[in-house]
Length: 78
Image 1 (cartoon, rainbow, N blue to C red):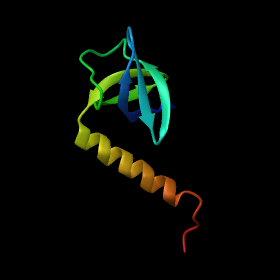
Image 2 (image 1 turned 135 degrees about the vertical axis):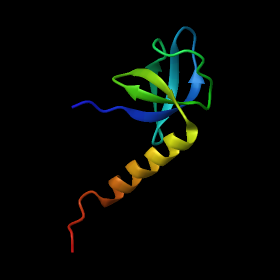
Image 3 (image 1 turned 120 degrees about the vertical axis):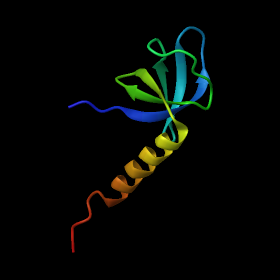
Image 4 (image 1 turned 180 degrees about the vertical axis):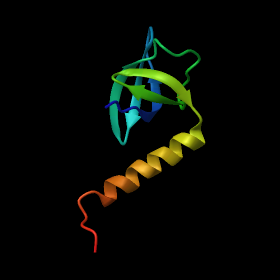
């Protein structure tokens, strides 16, 4: 099973590296597979690589769903 998640680019580095924010955690990733990424853009992250630029509204919706799922994990149905 593969998992790709939306992340926000917070810093660009020399070459094709960037720092992204993943739920408050910062991680360095590669932008080698995408062009035209700027600070503030959202990208889909898969195994350390940005694989696609993402619409900000769609990214926010997906992140909100992930947050909701995280809140509900571990709760037993009534």
